[in-house]
Image (cartoon, rainbow, N blue to C red):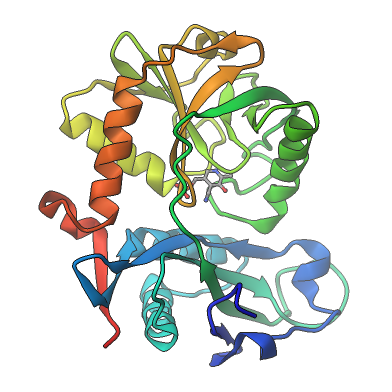
Length: 304
Ligand code: PMP
């Protein structure tokens, strides 16, 4: 099982990954009553006995709130402590990805959130940095992002990923790398698993939190970095046609961090992307612990 880190956390215990098994009757598997997290860590390049975790408390807070939608009270502090213990148990030696999941773990049928057991599990895998220097091509998806009236979109509920999966597969099947989803109002929302930014006339623009987006942690980090650099950041509704005349478009998410967009449908974006490049470089410096001004975004976990 070399594709995964050696220990998982399941039913309140650390167990070898290969023994972390759940039943075919697990409620969440049938009804999508689960919520996930996803965060990155890496050995400190300056000290191999330390692991750097990017914005750990923000990730734990979002997962705690996602669990709340499921009627499962799991505090930010409980999640944080368990993730730190999990890291210390696994002692990763390469950059990695942590996948915590809260889910209805009881066995049996009937979709509901009451009278069903819940659990919190964690596993992880090595995940190197991949910076797509050339950028990705995107199509505007025929699938719409769900709307807040029918779905708790501020949580990372697993069920929402059916739309991400449909959109991503449609994009790849039609010759693009990635999908851009509109919301039910026809405004730009996000990509299949990343938030979206565009640059117009030196201003950075991103769909606001009332546009049915996931409140991405990388998104918030990019907004803060741009503002600190004196760039005007507008969080507002974005029209599809604005994308086609943008100076720069990029996507943000934990796994890929900042990914430039090279082409949208048949519209090729400019090859020069000064703000995207600046933010990419700055974020990379921060996550590797080399920017003292942003040390507070990192949790340092000793593993010696
Ligand atoms: N939107 C969706 C649907 C996602 O799954 C993700 C990845 N978690 C994001 C946006 C980006 O969020 P973050 O920067 O917190 O990873």
